[in-house]
Amino acid sequence: MSIQWFPGHMNAAKKKAAEQMENTDLVIEVVDARLPEASTNPMVLELRKFRQRPCLKIINKVDLADPAATAAWVAYYNAQEGVSAYAMTTKKPADVARIPELARALAPHRGVPTKPLRIMIMGIPNVGKSTLMNALLKKRVAKVGDEPAVTKQQQKLYLDKNTILVDTPGMLWPKIAMPSDGLMLAASHAVGTNAVIEEEVAVFLADELLQSYPQLLVARYGFKDIESMDGIAVVEGIAARRGFRQKGGDLDFEKASHVFLGDYRSGALGRISLETPASRALRLEQFAAAEAARLAEKAAKEAEKAEKAARGKRGT
Image 1 (tube, rainbow, N blue to C red):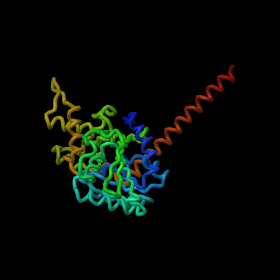
Image 2: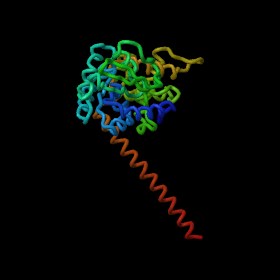
Image 3: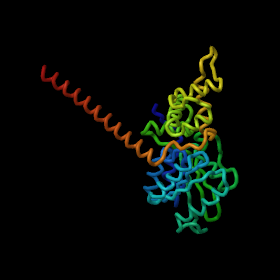
Image 4: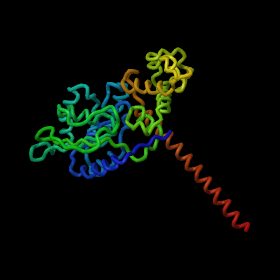
């Protein structure tokens, strides 16, 4: 399943962000700690690098992610030029309180009344940008909801007399190259429900957890034969154990999928990371190899087609 979601307001948001970047000193990019690189928008990287703007990478929702994986991601991003990583959760006011200081350190030439520090907060849908904005300002200025793309327009606000914040709508990008990225984003609720088949997303997530966190599936659902299960069996097992059945007695796979995804999103399953720097590198390598094989096969078919056409012409 290849998941793509780029509604019209996101394209408009990209254009506005490109215009605003010229008058921005620092980008705060918020990503999901459970899938930091899959939730990193390549358009943000492109826009800020074009203007040579530094980035404070907020790895949010660490309370839901595997601590070891999060530590690896912090080191990974801190090794990048112009990037400083900060792992946190908006649920802790002390975590939020450190952000202005970290931001000022990345743009020390700004931050006085005559030259206020201009910060643009960016990120994909449903990673906690609006919650972060409200927490920084200590009042509700941005609409928050457990649905992707709640924020539709930019808004500019003063954090203090020396700091300006610009909140931007959550943006994905026009084409998600790796199918696994789209599925991870969908599992983590960053994609609109109209763009996904929830049952397929649940099976993908179950297969991932069988590989990385089988003990959490056992603890949550009481499975006895986890070694012999695949993703479909996990979702069916949840339906059987929770008594989710359709009229006629068949297992309600759809309802079990919904409950399973809800357990992951809420943290009821435990602290889970769907990728690490090492697993990300492996996925990219495998994807590149598969793409090379696909293009080679396509070229061979086109060459064969051209040869047949040439033979036909020679024959006539």
